[in-house]
Length: 84
Image (cartoon, rainbow, N blue to C red):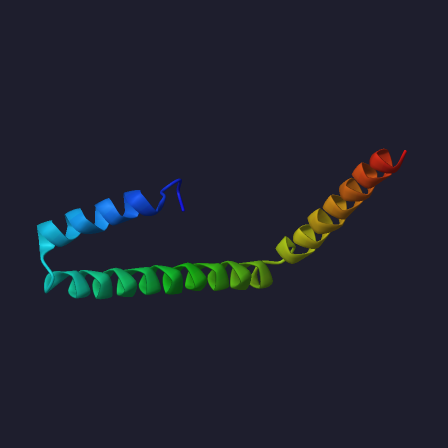
């Protein structure tokens, strides 16, 4: 986890406990959880919007399919070199 071991996490939690107090830590955790959930929801909304754009603009879907096929051919070429 980002190169943090158990001792480092314990020190960080102890400092957070001293700074914010025992009553405030659950509120901070709840707020952090809500923020992460909101961020993930926003990210998924953006991804869905991108898919809608691909389907709405003529030619973009076909270009994406061609790119996917080109990538597959490149991967086959790499596999062929490895097998030789």
